[in-house]
Image (tube, rainbow, N blue to C red):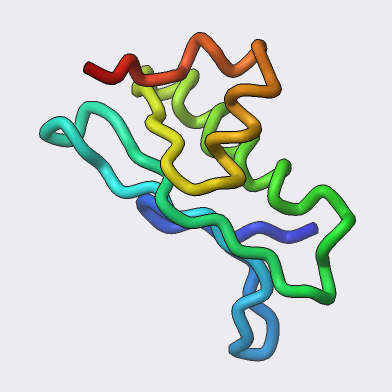
Length: 93
C-alpha cells in the first residue's frame, strides 16, 4: 500500500479520489498532536488500512518525540486496546 504524507496527514489517493486518511494537527504550541479523523473508503475496509495509518503516526511520534491525543473514535479505541501505544499517549488534564 502506497501511503502519501504531508504535515499532519497520511493518506491514500488514487486518480484524485481520497481512499484513506488519518489527520493529526499539532496542538500544545506544536509539541503534540491530536488525531481527529480517520477515514477508510468502503473499498478498502477490512484490510487493516486504518491500523496501518495509525501505526505511521505512532512511529512518527516515537521518532520525533511528540505525544498523541486520540480523539476520533477509531484512534481512541485502538489506544485503549493496544498497550504498546501507551508510550506516545498524551496525558490529558
